[in-house]
Image (cartoon, rainbow, N blue to C red; front, side, top):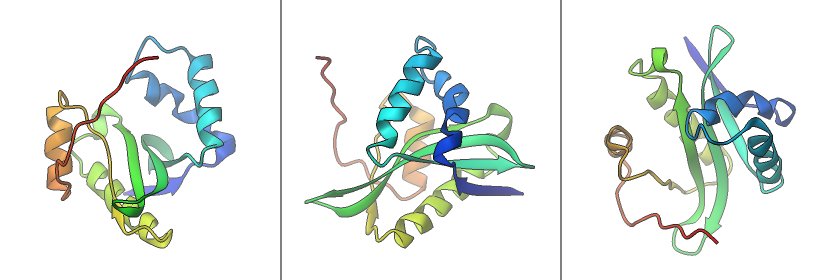
Amino acid sequence: MYHFKIIEQEQISSIIPFLKTLDKTLDDSTLQQRLNDMKSNNYECVGAYYNNELIGICGLWILNKYYIGRHIEPDNVIIKEKHRGSGVGEQMMNWIEEYGISKGCVASELNCYVSNHKGVRFWIKQGYKIIGYHMQKKL
């Protein structure tokens, strides 16, 4: 039904329409510039496909931090509305966990906005624990 794979760097622009759903104030050129910068910092993106149509994405970072070790960080999970509730998100997370293990990761860590109640429920259902706050300061 659904299949998942890392989107080739040459095709990374295909995720821009998904990213625009998160922040409609960002234009294509800004998003493309940021993606180009992110690619040089080991950013990857997994695509969820249904009948060869890209229907969902999740950015990925593989990081190493002293308190958790080598880990995979899912970032900005976006699924097309008509596929939400179909189990594709859970299947994608299972794929990402296996991918992380294949890359030597010992854990997974992520950020989720406190106002994203559905997201918080989803992550808790996937076995994640709330351990802190995500904080930001504009410079």
